[in-house]
Length: 312
Picture 1 (cartoon, rainbow, N blue to C red):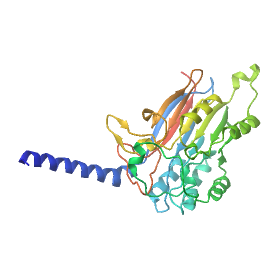
Picture 2: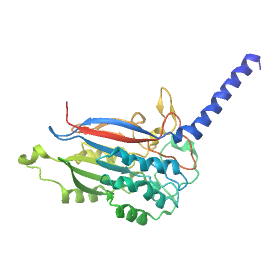
Picture 3: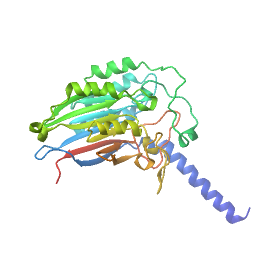
């Protein structure tokens, strides 16, 4: 090997080591808020701020994450939406509820579950994520999901797993429709629609001008459930699951969405549409990662703050 080759190899090795240190020790702790503004409210309506939290993958020792989530109450959102994978450890429930408690004091909170709210993490081959998402589990759920759900509901959070709910925020009526996690095929569209039918506002022409804004909530943004939420009239769909790719290539973006969502939509705001309808889609890159994959590169952990306002 020539001297120039050795120097090049040394430089590449230094860059690679720096990237590993940055992604494992620094970036995954750099929590940030990704902000969007959407023109979805009726004329004259007061703006509404929706805070979306996803994929905390919380472990009980992650005090920096716990304290940061608690501090988000200072934003004074009008609505908080939790899009699943809140648990990251078998013993995380108490820490999770402690994290969320301040938010429940300032705004209504709604939630759906993700697969990690049923299954604790385990070591996986990361290369599998680049091939195809694994949607089948050979394990028995080991997280007490019923107890987790009761804990969230005891805080006043609204359960949207295959269910719907209505809220009046300031002068805007909302209808929220949610699905349990499609990644493990726990979604039940018909059950959600039965719930929606029980709370849906009239759709006659006299009430058309005040038709509620519909927000769809789901953990994993697979195309089929996104289409079902679109069919049911969602104006905005909120999802998580992808971690934004978790490791993104600068200038390229995500290499995988860990589902059948196009990788270009694995993080941030886009539009989901079919031949007849369209809705805004926000896919949060989330706040965490599996304790067995403690890495983030070019993809800071995030919460989303979405301001809904009238068209200009």
